[in-house]
Amino acid sequence: MANSEHFVRPDVRAFMDALAAMGGPTIDTMTLDEARAGYMALHAIGDRPARELAVIRDLCCPGPAGDIPLRLYDARESRDAGPVIVFFHGGGFVIGDLDTHHNLCTEIAAQMDLPVVAVDYRLAPEHKFPAAVDDCEAAARWVATSPAALGRPATGLVFFGDSAGGNATIVTSQALTATPAECPVVLQVPVFPLAKDAMQCASLDMFAEGYGLTKLAIEFFDAQYDPDRTDARAFPNLGDHAGTPASIVVTASLDPIRDSGRAYAAQLVAAGIDCVFIEMQGTTHSFTNLRQGMPSAQTDLERIFAAMKMVLETPK
Image (cartoon, rainbow, N blue to C red; front, top):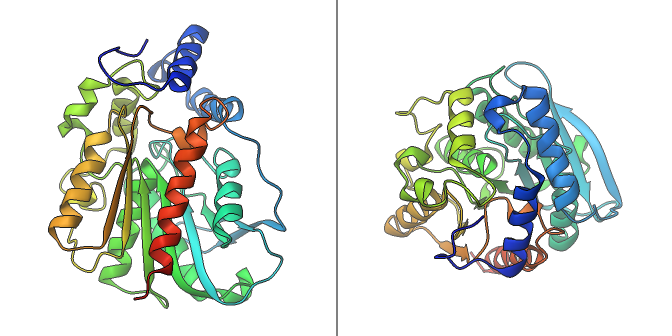
């Protein structure tokens, strides 16, 4: 049960208590197949249903180790050239895929009225660091140069990702800043991102248990992904922030990796980057995929969309 010294929204507390009552094994005792199926099941019970869209189409693009599966979402059958959102899913680089975040991607496409391309990057431990972020960079560059395949010419890229996908969002932004693509990155939206080594965050022990994502799970993901702790592609707070695109950094106040996102936002502000920082109070990691179980999370997600529209509509 969540610690009463921290503010916890009533619907968040109810959902966390319901998960605790269900019991079940810890992730370190599961097989990979069980862990991946459990993540899918959590989102199936916790998230709102998918929206109906004019276009939901599976695609693929070339990657460093073979084709990378993608999924295109759009509320419109066709559209003129404009920004394209490239979405990177969470799951510690170990679990998660196109299906675990399908409902969320339909919501993003519907509410933002922009095409969304979700990326199914390689997972650890079968493919350790930096396989995932290499795939994300390859997919982003493909989106920038493949208007015929998408049927939607990109004038700018918007990177959006949650948790590990938030890490991939920042890492891919840094890669495309260092070596620009055919069209610019106009916005990045890392949501409760792993931007700094979680093992260095006070929040890891503060919210180690009782808030969904646990310290044990984070340690498990870290061991499977096996990141190089000196490499900015693993922990992008180590990278160069000059030239970073406009950013919306989102954290959750009860998240064990909360301090990672806070630290990254502070670095962007110190570097003079156009940055909106939002900390959702009284909620947990993965709230974007738990909007049925925690109804207040829908409002949180809509706050993110409002910030995105504000930034994209600001004259440059």
